[in-house]
Image (cartoon, rainbow, N blue to C red; front, side, top):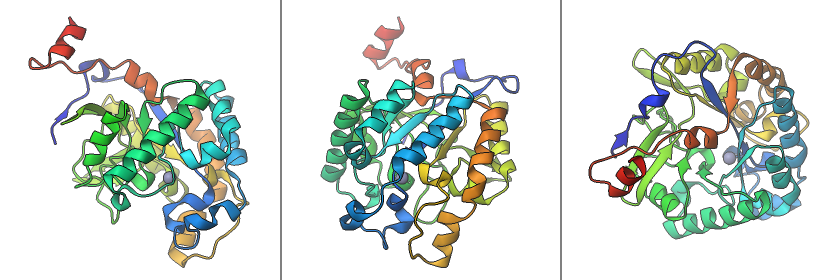
Length: 309
Ligand SMILES: [Zn+2]
């Protein structure tokens, strides 16, 4: 797949601290995480205690302490049951984007199912937020090699950007070899702005350093180094977190030892580390970056030339 580097306005060496990063949240219940799918399948979701409103609002409060706005990728399933939460996010100036409808992985979805998921979630979120939904993030970053058809569906359904291609090599997810910085993807259906989660590069390897379990379980310095590296290279880093990662009191589900560590490990560290992160770096929404980013121009694209001229 052909990629176009970010427009030169965002390149060049920025002084430390001048680069503004992206703070993003995948808004879902603690039982939506893919790692818990075997013990909390969809038919039981409505019988489990809902905790998403309180945990999301505690993230909103942390952001408010620093006057920071973030991008919230909200699950349609959550929005339908908690319309006031989506309205509150929009009212406080945060960007509302889509995390799909029911957290089904792209690798488990047929194109028609995926289309329905992104169409329905976009419509519900737009009616609640009162603003256009521009962006999408796949559950568990599940747009992997071979699933690029999903990017065309996003374009056809009116999305302007995607934040699902995690440029790392991991079992079950990751888009190995993908670009590390925000970039334009040229697809049969058009051009889509891609905003990958932050990685730390070195020694020929690419480490996931964008947030989530890596933020809780590994030293804080990993995410810090990744964002500083993004600054040195003149492009925003994209950080992500889930509401359940600040919810130490969430009900514990019976899972394997490994899943227990990955899902419940270090929950008590999330909040103090987020405070530090928000103090040390500047963040904004992805929509703001997209708004400042001119479409790439190409001699064979009359529409882009017209808008550039
Ligand atoms: Zn998710």
